[in-house]
Length: 387
Ligand code: NZQ
Ligand code: ZN
Image 1 (spheres, rainbow, N blue to C red):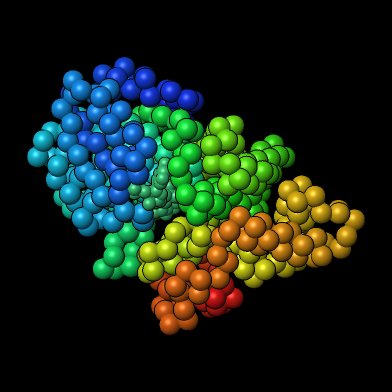
Image 2 (tube, protein in one colour; image 1 turned 60 degrees about the vertical axis):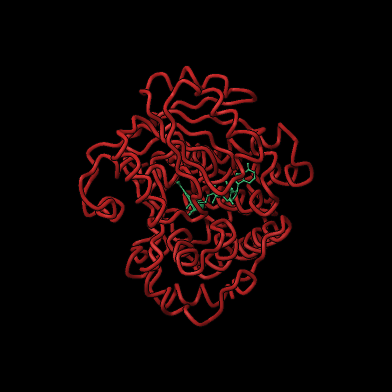
């Protein structure tokens, strides 16, 4: 078991109608609010109007149009400019992970005199950030309970996971009813994202019995609840369970004391969505079973046996490689069963830039140090097998 130093300072306020606490929460952070949101879903579900009504006594500035795979230019740059020009006190992010991630980068950039990319690219360490409150409307990333934000820079094909302890949201509102309108495609992709967050922590050298148990149940809960959400998008209990499953997924609580896996599927997927702007969870679902097949060997097989037996109920008396292969096939079939396109060509990616992307990942993601080390040629092979 490894040493760790762990704290999550985020206050979670969970459940139906909890938005009524918004005025009380926001009163702790000053008068000037930057309200950030995406392409309009929050207007369709009435949340925009509700927020404006509840914060009628605040001075509200707005940054809208934050896209999935949020962009440095214009969204982060515009947000930083609005904060600086207007002495914003607090950011209120309302939407999915992309809105919240973008808001985290803005929060750090607003307190920094130079180019915000210095912070995102880890050239400079943030010394401070504006406080962030969020109302999350999509169960997926866990950004509401972690200190990371993933930002894309189109002209360089970079998609960087920017982590800093200043970026934990101060308060996250989680009302499952806001996720009733999430389309099937995003519900399924959100499940795949959260499942992969767990797998990235599960497949490692050193894990504890406790963590394995948490993670195996986390995976099972996601698989059961996503199906209920897809069958009946307004199933409150299923949406609520899935929301919390996702919130836990990326905050490291599942892996306290574990060794680091290197998060290989995320490293590879970030290149796919940087080059082709695809949906993150779909990219992960496509890569994951191919990565599993690629790294399965005598050194890694025991983790796959545990995963197969405890998550999918595969017969533990079978040969270990048979269990592992059945587990990988079950992973693929599950993603397929929730409607995820399972080939890169289905999401508009062909052979043409595979070598370039593999090189980008090899140079930028450090996967040669992952639990199952990946060199540039391994990454290219995994991409090709995913076509
Ligand atoms: O833009 P709007 O109109 O709001 O529509 C969004 C968007 O089109 C829509 N949506 C959100 N809530 C909705 C809704 N539609 C109907 N009803 C609702 N209640 O869903 C679409 C996708 O939204 P997005 O925020 O992009 O999805 P998600 O939450 O999956 O976030 C994905 C981003 O997060 C990053 C990903 O790489 C990607 O950029 N990640 C962030 C992480 C983190 N901060 O810890 C970890 C993850 O590994 C991930 O990399
Ligand atoms: Zn993810």
